[in-house]
Image (cartoon, rainbow, N blue to C red; front, side, top):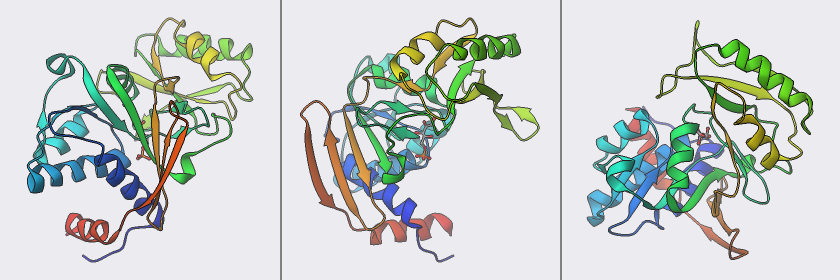
Amino acid sequence: MTGELSPIDKAKYVSAYRAAEMVQDGMRVGLGTGSTAAWLVRRLGERVRDEGLKIKGVPTSTATAQLAREVGIEVVSLDQAGWLDLTIDGADEFDGELNLIKGGGAALLQEKIVATASDQMVVIADAGKEVEALGAFPLPVEVIPFGWQTTRTLIEEALDAMDVLGTAATLRMNGEAPTVTDEGNHILDLHLQRIGNPRQLALILNQVPGVVENGLFIDICDKVVIGHGDGRVELRDINEGTIELGQVGTDEADNLFSDLAD
Ligand code: 5RP
């Protein structure tokens, strides 16, 4: 099969490609989940194969663990690694302070644990993920299956007092059945439209019995690599207050895409 990547996929690829350059020999690296993170894992696999890069990867989902092994990355658990040098992961939204919504791929719990256990978290994203205010993307919340409807009611009641525009919470489905996360939990997606105070909301949600974790990542992300469909990449460092611009070729991505599709 032949084909070309869409501009969005090229944007994801170039952000992942640039972020993969931050990975150095000997690092313990948290490997995110989702389509952008999958590009990163593939690129790191190439570097392992072609450059002899030696890393230990800590995946944030069973899907990422499987891909990482397939491309030749040594996979270890977080407990084996202890602490990580760097985690690179995608996001569903990021704002100007690099606060995030994550969990579109239902992996937010492991993603948050892994990112928090890292010296640095770098987000890789296409430019469309940047927002003025978080909340247009429904906020994922991982809840235990026991009494999930009660948990949903309690969440909706808590949202009444929050600075948000909507309060509906829907159970994420996988076909006819509720989505089940790697930890055996369910996901409630909160349709908030706009989150006025993400920090406060993140704290309040985790007070509700039955909530395991929410998809707001506050003060966790250090850098974002923003990719564009024409190969431009922008690296923003929130701690240093710096912006670096660059360019990544996308021919390799098209070849890789054709190989994957064959
Ligand atoms: C998974 C996530 C993903 O990082 C997020 O959904 C972005 O995915 P993609 O890179 O496919 O757009 O949080 O739980």
